[in-house]
View (cartoon, rainbow, N blue to C red):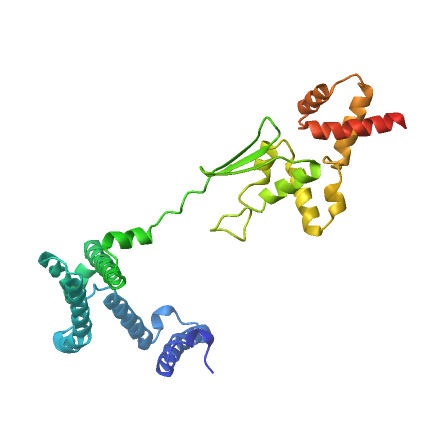
Length: 323
């Protein structure tokens, strides 16, 4: 059973390492048992140390070129792929009807093959930064040429020209249509979609108004039929003097089928209980204030109020004062 640090080695290498360790430990045992100095070590240790030094010196030598004995095997292994790549590039160039000057690009695989052989013959030049940069540049140029010729050939098979293929690959997204809304002088709600399409409706009561706003929320774009509606809640709230929170509440009631709450004229509290209590207490202490003054005082404290929210708090204040 061998130690785990020697697992990647072969058994022959294990035996050599064990022999060297034995030669190194045996003199140490003799020294500790007899008390002799280090100058009386056996000759075998000195020989082993000298061999170790010679091996280290040999490893530090610069790389040398391999012998020409295996040049035939290298040529047989590397030349056929280079010839196949050259033939493929030549066929692609001829199929794309490239100019005659561009046919010279078909020799890129052969040029890369020659650089590989030169690296085997002169290893120092192959490890030089200039040699690495040249090989990488030729490889990138080879890949770019293959991609370009493949795209042109695909465009010809699909019946597209070069410009049409490029346009089909980089087609920009169509611009999103514009939308605007307003309330006319006669109370009609108007929504303009794009430049030529308009929706006009005059609500007869509050329930009709809510249903019209919910209908506007059902407008979707063709490209995104299952995603969010085209008209945002904030847009509708700004156009038709309502609150985004109310629109969200009406949509939830409509989806839940709660028609009683949807037809109710009471909007319900739109502020947290603590903020409502603060407004009621402030207005109770200053009962002569108007709605605008209460809104200004609340905005000074960082609380944004609207007319509907303040009106709801006003009704609550009168209920509290009456009780």
